Length: 277
Ligand SMILES: NC(=O)c1ccc[n+]([C@@H]2O[C@H](COP(=O)([O-])OP(=O)(O)OC[C@H]3O[C@@H](n4cnc5c(N)ncnc54)[C@H](OP(=O)(O)O)[C@@H]3O)[C@@H](O)[C@H]2O)c1
Image (cartoon, rainbow, N blue to C red; front, side, top):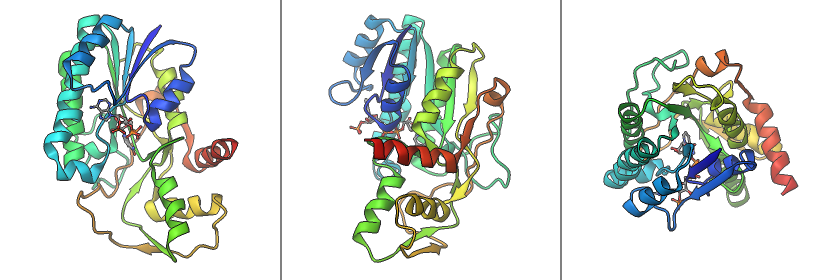
């Protein structure tokens, strides 16, 4: 199989490279491969992949709020261009999307069939990308995931450990609940999913959920900073409002036998991978 990965140097992209190492791969990322440019799209079409995993995105959620044009250009129109490339070379597309397409006010986990309703620019721009994929292609998987962390990434885990070195105490909210997800597990889940020609929307996260505060507690414990003063907070001032309770129910992939392990186990595995270098 010929596989193209966009965002190949991001945290998920790196895990995808590991998991799909046996395949012939085209790795696209900035610089120089900007998914919004015609050169990149023509190059992708000429390479003629069988499968495109589209992980490139503007993922800085507050940055999207500051610069909506850039967010819609990459996450909306950029995704449309990648979908058009897939159409032209008859490739199957995996489009990575997010829990942020939901408003996060439902008490129960969100089903794949629930109507999205984003509450910030990042979520809106990612939803626009999803809609283009659905309009342009029949052979697609939209994989919504959440709270990603993986090797080499600028992620919540690394941020908490770094701040614990720099500050006397930390405060994290109990009012934002989600499912931390290890990119390695997600990449493996995707590799299993693409063997099934059952297209459409999937929710794939590590199982279980926690607040940012609980996640930070687990990170400090595993990072050998169990004594570090960490306090629960009700709110945190930031530009983009996150969905308060955007837990995703994995219904469709579970029917195919694909489930990601519980998030605390996955976090232990990440720390192991980190210490193995
Ligand atoms: N991170 C999360 O918590 C999270 C949660 C749910 C869903 N997702 C989705 O999961 C996917 C992977 O996320 P991630 O955490 O691996 O993100 P990431 O580490 O930020 O990686 C994204 C990669 O895409 C690249 N990129 C950005 N704009 C591009 C463009 N115009 N053309 C080509 N490449 C471009 C980035 O390059 P630069 O670094 O140079 O910008 C980066 O290497 C994304 O679709 C994201 O929306 C992420």
